[in-house]
Image 1 (cartoon, rainbow, N blue to C red):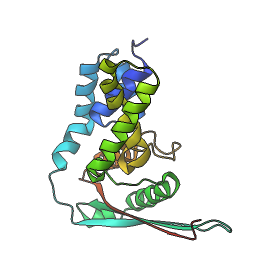
Image 2: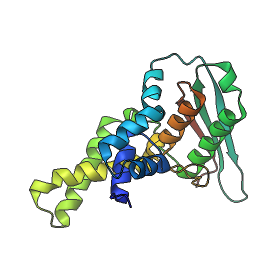
Image 3: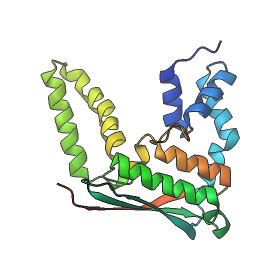
Length: 204
């Protein structure tokens, strides 16, 4: 039996961008050796995905989700999913993925698309709140910085689309960003979410 833990799987996922099962299988096949698992994942497509990221994206599709329920706000989501070729952009799987991500955004209510979109003052304020909370918990000052670094990831996971766990775990286990990366590997193209818009009528 391979010698690794769930934390090892999670760490490998974050370092490589691989999905949950891909990371777990790589660790199993390499006997829990993290470095060998990284190499194995790269051999299976992660490295090629990184090389493709420099290529132009001139095509794509708009994912759409509309939620209408009596007594609740009307919610509309648009997701711009970009690809390199029209062939991929018009494929059923590509369009379905765009729509699924729009549905995810309606349910998970991300405030920003990527970490780069989060305003610096919002991050600074969150870090201040985390540090204050840690002090109130009686944590010593020398480890508060480490606590802040750890807990800020939860802030991103809650509020950044690419960092959120995809809501349809029956279809994909991992973050929205990992879902897009996996689609890019499968399709052999550079695929990314380039825009997100939310319209809500009747809130409150």
